[in-house]
Image 1 (cartoon, rainbow, N blue to C red):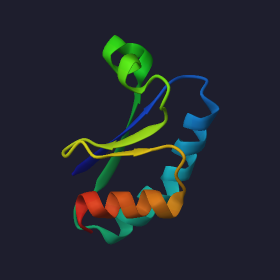
Image 2: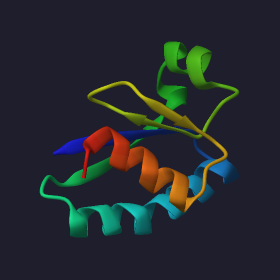
Image 3: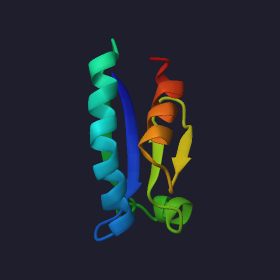
Length: 89
């Protein structure tokens, strides 16, 4: 399974937009991929280190296995291309 982390925080309208945008992308990827892709939403408020790293950049989509990041703003095509490049689907 390939895991992507969406760094976000509560009450962040951009984070909510990113998460909503990613749902159909992940559904499409999972319909095509041999290895499932999962999204984990991580609230940066849970960690001072994450706040320091992502505080002014959220939402950020990160490939957990490789550390590659896609920073906001991104659209569905960019998210799909990012996931595809990380997972080689």
